[in-house]
Image 1 (tube, rainbow, N blue to C red):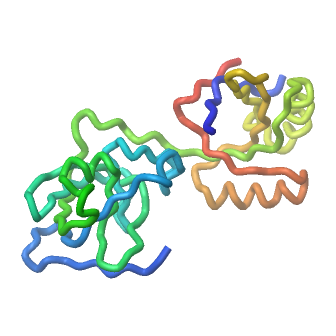
Image 2: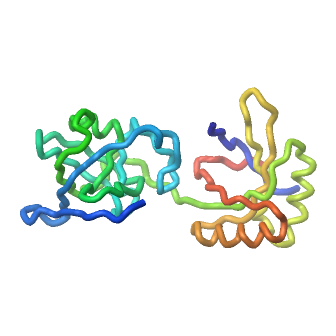
Image 3: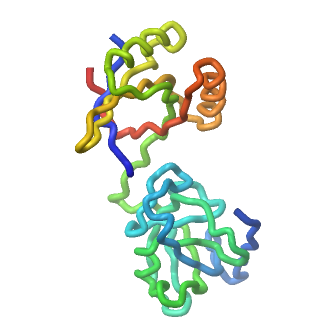
Amino acid sequence: MFVSIVASASCAKKKRVTTHSPHAPAGSETGLASWYGYPYHGRAAANGEIYDMEKMTAAHRTLPFGTWVRVTNLTNNKTVEVRITDRGPFVDGRIIDLSRAAARAIDLIGPGIAQVRLDIIPPPANAPTPAAVSYSIQIGVFSDRDRAERLCQSLEPQFGSSVRIVAQRQPGRPDVWRVLAGAMSNLEDANALAARLRQQLGEALVVRIDPAVSDAP
């Protein structure tokens, strides 16, 4: 179950062979496409987003996240435009894994796989601007705000203003208070810091910070 952070405060796979067509234009790739839905729906994709099989997204082994690709089903010439958010497919000969919605758009659901051509395209005019991903370290979760405040204050000499308390609303259940420290754009740096804090404090979990979350005093 996924819950949303609504307020925060400071302390007071396998090797794959890719095939290319010698007649494909530059920036194109040809090979087999497949699609994926359950059980990946609702899980984190490789770029950190939650995978929604009803959105126009896809997995590719090497294209940068956020790349937009036009996929043409070469058996019927139907096309669909997708954004790369995940990694895969890790099956020999396959070059892209489409979301269920994208696969449906080019009649790929029934056969399961089809020969396709990929063409990198500019993002659509209405495409959302990718938000910068950041990571923090969760050091404790408390049902008592006072306990969270005490831990937060004890960490201020080490982390300064980057240590804060985040209120997490849980529908039908009491709110909890999470103590977070640090703000890093690099996941490897966050993992390294978490390992050090785990030795020091006994609990440290890397969490992804949603840029849409607003901070409140």
